[in-house]
Every structure is written in C-alpha cells, then in structure tokens.
Image 1: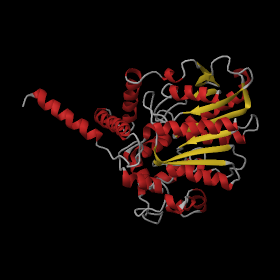
Image 2: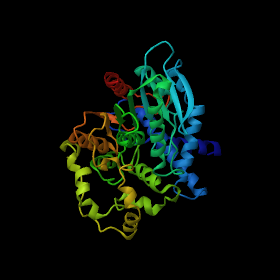
Image 3: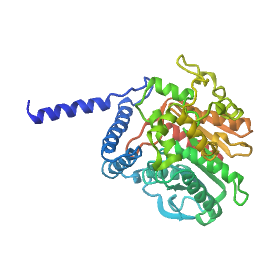
Image 4: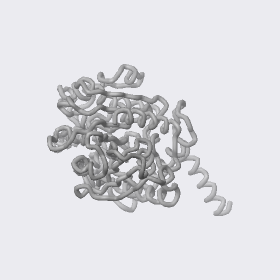
Length: 419
C-alpha cells in the first residue's frame, strides 16, 4: 500500500471515529447534531495534542479558541445575514467593551425596550462577535436596543471578574438608557449557559443596588447556576446516555468550573476533586443550606426517577486533597455570585423565563432555580424541551437547529408581552 493510500485510509478512519458519537433517539436533525458533536470531539483531540507540547490543563481552552476563531472567520457566514439593517456600534460601558445593536431607523419614535444579552461558552469561550447573528435577530424580533457584553474570559480572568464586568456594564446602561433611546424601566437581561449564570447574578446584584432601576425581566436559557454538586440527576443522566461525548459532558463542566475559581492554576488534582464531588465536604452535603438550595428533592420526580440514579449519600470519606480544596476555597464556593442558587433572599427578583433541555448536564440547575424563585413569590415561567440539547439555540451563523429556532420564537413572544 502506498503512503498516500495509507494516509487516506487513516484519515477516513479518523473521520468515522469522530463522527461516531451517541445521538439521542428523539433529537431532530440528527446529522447536524452529529456534526456539531464531532466538531467538539475534534477540538478536544486538537487540544490534547496541543497539551503535549504546551504543559498545563488550561492549554486546551486556548487551542480550542484558536480553532473557533478560524472556523468563524473562514468557514461560517457573517452574522449580518440575520439583520443586515441593524446598526452595530462597539462601545465601552464603564470600561467594559459592549456591542450595541439598534433597530433600523424609523421603526419607532418613542423610547424602546432594552435587552442585555450575556453570551455563553463556559466563561472561557466565545464573544459578542460569535453571537452577532443571534443578537441581530433579537434586536429585530423585539424591536429593542440589544447590548451584548464582552466580559473577560477564564482562565486568564477568574471569579469574580466576569460577574464584575457584566454588572458594571449593566448598571451603566441602566443609568444612561435614555441616551440610547431606551426606557430604563423596560430593560430585560438574559443569556445562555454561562451567560445565564451571569445574567442571574447581575439581576440579583441590580436588585440589591438602590442607585438604579431594577431589571424588568430575566431570561435564562439552560443556565449554569452552581458548581457545588456535579452529581445531580441531570449529570447522571447525561453520563449514562452520552458519556463523555456530546456538547457538555461532565469533563467540560468540570474544567470550566475549576478554571473560573483557579484560572491558570487549575491542575489535575483540582479537576479530579470536582469530577468526584470531592471538592465539597460531607458536612456541607448534610447541612441545611444544601438541603434548602441544592436538594435533589426540589426536582419533580420524573427528573430523578432513573434506574441508575444515585442520591447524595455518605459515599466517601473526603480525600486529603478534597479536604484541602474545601478548606482553602469553601468561602468562594459558597459565594452566591459564584453559585447563585445559594442566594439567601430571592424576594422581589424580576419576572423570570427559564428554558431547560433534556440532554444537558446542567439541566437541573435551571429547574431548581425556578422552584426557589416560586417559593419566594417570583413570577416564573419554565419551559422544558425533551428533544433538545445544550447549545441548541445558537451554535453559529449558518448552523441552525429548527427546534432551537422554535425555542427562541417562544422566548421572543414572551419577552414582547412583558416589555
């Protein structure tokens, strides 16, 4: 066999390998889902190769960023196709870079509503440019001024920097809304995944800040809201059905969670502790705060009634490494700005719209948060989609899932009714 044939054969085998990923039976557009999962798998392989030459557990994030940048610039179409007439300006709100999207001139002569969007990506990936198509479409659908925040990313910038950037930009906009033809009393905030986390913490902080208007609405799209229990039923379900493949396996969440706290100091010992829930003490798991804010019993029975489900128990003594991590970091772990499910008083939070999806390790975070908000008397609308997966609303321009579009149409309808 010639070298050319051998290399071609090996490449063919590799392509088949990366496309061989578990695909849930009820997910629509299976080939497209498989392609996105394969891309995730490929980036993981490149990152692993990169780490062989550049030591450190965070090197794979930097490599994946480079791959995403290349893909966006050379493969995907421009996001302008979703709103070519939308006006975009790049500005600084209290020092934080933001993208400001304004509807085409002439749509309205009165003050407009505003929507602050915070992008997802585990706090380590993506930026407003990647989400440009989504935010342009949002601007048109809502006839609103949309602000997309370019918060600083991990692992270079650790907690609480992404929160602080998002909070500063949001507060500045609320105080200067009229300068953008926006009614400060008609401003919503929202985001997907890690952006849902930041939206939640910012909404809580704005509510506690007496110097500015409160936000009228928060929209949380499969939000990531805690890093204390990585063994909730949804983590277990994802592990059982999809393993370490797909969009958001435990390994990915673990890396992002650890990087958010430890940044460039993240190492294999820390990752192993997070993977096994060894980073939290048994005393905490048996304590009142855990039972009130993180208990699996807060979930409807159907979301934890799995034959493979294992409830929290005294399943380990905590390792020496885990005990050290808890002793050194528990104050940070228990900060509601890191895990907003731990917020003590949710009374008076804005009207909330929560989207959760079935094939998602962090599905339960959104469900539990909705329950806690309802207990505090907050107006909550929760929509769950059995045939959807994490990331379905936006992968990139030109990569559109019909079910994701339907989810967003329902979001737009709800937001229009409230703003």
